[in-house]
Length: 174
Ligand code: APR
Image: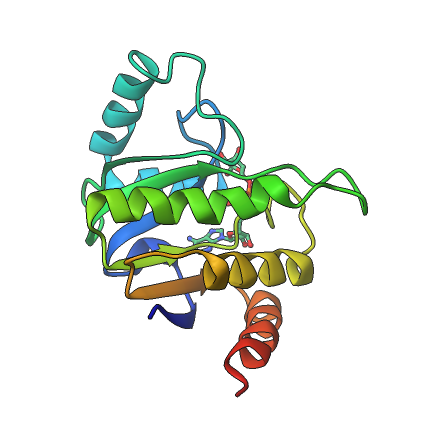
């Protein structure tokens, strides 16, 4: 049984077995969560990402996929990098965003991670509307069989917190 929790704060300050990064396909850093994770996690994360690009991820990480690296100076064992879809408007296909959560949990299971912290993937630079992204995030995790014991949704502002708590309230019947 996986416990779902909601936290308002900086995901790079979370203590968890795995922290999920809202990356881009280059795996070579960026802004937002990506920038914060590399800043606080230090160069070891980028070095590991570069090694992935030089080996099995020569063309980068595809949207909806996930791959783990060590977590450098973060209070975590691993960073699970995943690439969310860019919102293309009301008929945007949610499947790649669902896949980010499912694939990140699959990678977490491969690692034996028991606690996983997720940001609100695709809701920043990739412009996915928060309410819809929160529903997709919670529903995807709830419906994915996993050994992960705690999934923490770590959001950065009150608006996101309200969106997630609304959905989680529905889910937990609270
Ligand atoms: N902790 C938790 N949440 C954060 C943090 C943080 N330190 N920084 C930003 N966020 C929130 C944003 O407010 C947003 O709601 O994370 C959500 C995702 O925003 P982005 O980081 O912009 O990620 P995304 O929308 O998936 O875009 C990915 O942005 O940073 C680049 O390299 C990244 O190209 C990629 C793209």
